[in-house]
Image (cartoon, rainbow, N blue to C red):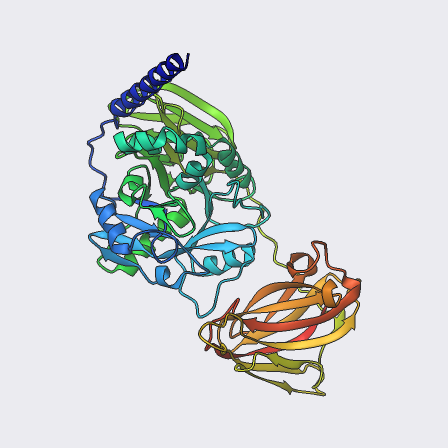
Length: 558
């Protein structure tokens, strides 16, 4: 009996191996020998190096990119920001490496590029972090927004550039059964087939993207989240799948307005500008190169509106150029719903009449084969006479209850090696200014915490107010925390929110609802039992050695 079971098991295993081998060897990338037009640059987005948790250095990454004839690689190592990755922009082996970071925020991960390297640490609050990068004309994409382990949770945040629609690393983590069974054999026989097999149709991500575009302009992108390693233990891993293998799977085609220059910083700015405009499309490159694809809108007067752009009126045509030697399926959506579906298309160009306002985007799939349901090409939307409510300027908020204003209201608190001093100017003039000068110093090379603070320790009742309001300026751009605590002893809870100061005075209002809990009971703050509040700068928003001065006036509650 056991021999029969053993023989049957061997037979099943042999059949499984045979089917696996057949699928692997029969997989072929569709042929597209057209040269990539000079106004398109092909690259990959979301790559980790040894600057954080990737296995390889930037030289290795760029060699892998060069082997795939990629024009650019966007590095996104962990940090707020990752200083090494941020400073890594360079031409290496004829590939443009664009230094960037993946921020770990309270609400998830945010891939950011195109920012100036700051003298301080970017904030953990999502809206604040988005605003920091936007201030520098950079881009921000929500990383793996629907991931089980690290999803994006703050869907009220606005102003980010877009979201990752496909994330290869996230999909690999979701395919655990396949990963521990057939994937290693598939990868050994045909790595492109194995890595493509983990991709599924991103129905939920597309729906989330469409919801975002009902209120603003947001773009979709394919991301690798490449690490070039498979962890086998806490401190052990296999260098698998390789950078070169993953670079063959998902790519981004950016339509540039000028040729890339030898100056790496200027060339990086050109690519970032494409992403910021939404003038790019994403491709499952392992299925076929998309060289020759075009998607734009022609207005009635002949003006061409590119992907990511705004058309003034409907009544024009949506143009798709598909000069491929294999048939494709086309889905055009309007405001998230199917507007036009064309199957088994072999025409090299299609013009679709648009007679109503809306947000129009296109997905192109292969007509045949196992992967025919996947969005081979995902184009960014074109906003046709699509009205969007302009943002209202925040009203000028005045304090209802004044805090401070006397020479002994705040006191200095700090770690022993840091320095700080308080000075009050204009006492008796009706609008005193509190000046706080500081210099941060860590206690030792291994010490983590260092801080200086303007502290007010007093039992207070804030329950009749919505939040803090104050005016601030700094000797240079920098970030501070505003923190308050409730309760005492083991029942103490702390809540804080960051704010940015610049050289000019600005009025800031921070509602209590936006404060993040640092520690204490998982419950809303009891505003009747305030025990202290602080203006502080520490290792969470600045580096050891940082020095400067912040000035505050009109501190109060509203």
